[in-house]
Amino acid sequence: MTSQVSMNSVQTGELMYTADEMMTVAAARALRDGITCFVGIGLPSAAANLARATHAPGLVLIYESGTIGAKPTELPLSIGDGILAQTADAVVSVPEIFNYWLQPGRIDVGFLGAAQIDKFGNINTTVIGGNYGNPRVRLPGAGGAPEIAASCHEVIVVVRQSTRSFVERVDFVTSVGYGSGPGDRERLGLTGAGPMKIITDLGVLEPDPATLEFTMTGLYPGVSAAAAKERAGWNLAVASEPEIIAGPSPAELGALRNLQRSTDDR
Amino acid sequence: MAEIVSLAEAVERAIHDGDAVAMEGFTHLIPFAAGHEVIRQRRRDLTLIRMTPDLIYDQLIGAGCARRLIFSWGGNPGVGSLHRFRDAVEHAWPTALEIEEHSHAGMANRYVAGASGLPFAVLRGYNGTGLETLNTGHDTAPTIKPITCPFTGETLTAVAAIRPDVAVIHAQRADRAGNVQLWGIAGVQKEAVLASRRSVVTVEEIAESLDPRPGAVVLPSWTVSYVAHVPGGAHPSYALGYSVRDNDYYLAWDAIGRDREAFGRWLEEHVYAVSPGQP
Image (tube, rainbow over all chains, first blue to last red; front, side, top):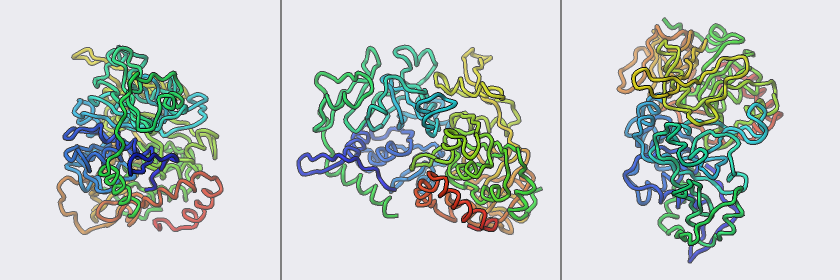
């Protein structure tokens, strides 16, 4: 797998790392050991596997291909690579993974990516621009995300931050975050709590407790509040004293690069 | 009872212009060789049904076989877009493609309803998404509607059953009587075959008899129409125990699929100039 490496890299202390590596490390840290996590492919899968390889060896990874408790030693390219089935505690059918495992609320964290996300954490992976019948860009579509976003106890989104991906209102609601604000999830009958964190290549956002609008509460070393605001398509709120998130430790960076190397080498 | 025939004969007899065809296999066991045979036999106006169109439907769509696509996630897993699918939706090339889209949970339940002989399935899903109001226009009936639970009064979502004309799957093994056995990631293949009027199963191996395998899916011969022996018929996806996923092929497809001419050359070299069942 060719990893997408961001152009800008950062140096703190002796360690040189990319913005994407920082994002993956921050996302991995958000997963507590021992929880169950429904994993989307791409950035979320890299982060979930990094968590397993570092502080959360007991993290239970669940992929929509029906692999429960997968323990891959290299990053899978797809959600159905053989290594997921071969290392899983159980492999179940696709109807079963959605109906028996996701729908009743058995899974702690849904870990998703996004093409577009808005200030209420609604996700678009369907169409951009034009209209639905005649879009400017046709994206892959929903996959498992709408029900992951609805039914997991909470959701974490990993997405690179830009004015294109961070929009005031998504062009199409593929997966519901907080809808138009407080009360919408309850009104819609969504059983999970919704998105608790958006982790980007600049920092971490959390919903404002009152308005549920996503606010930048943490920044990576060397990232300014102004830079974060500049790379958002809405008037992004930044906490008055945002947490400065620690850069990757040597152990985290080593583990991430090992995972990626084993994938590149195969 | 399933008939054991050549791949060309299975496709010839089972799949006709205008049919609704579900080629299933969730990343694993995708029936690529059968898909290529459908292209070679130049089927047209198909309604293609598949949760994850993947490269197999990118190829069929680019070759002009499809009029309509029913799906839930149309990307190249871990790589990016399906460019033939996008070209069809964004520019009607090589021909316009109607789409009916769902979530995975919705599609899986539509197959379950089809396999169960029910007109619809019920799930908690789609609430608040843009998907629940789609698929209501065009010339087709809506396939997502709210439904009230008769016991609790809760509002749930009903999705219409899928009943394809033909299901096409790839499996590890069949025996000489046409009983089919598959294992590993089993996706929705059992549901797709049981929901369909006819079915084609390509297999890695035809054995004298099937040794029991805990956890394997077995489709008895009398649920299957045609079995064809096509070793490697899932490439570039894989058959657990027989092959590994050819991730390099998926990565390389991006450049081929992106360009109409490169795709045309690929079709000539790798499909039209090749005999059925050959990689």
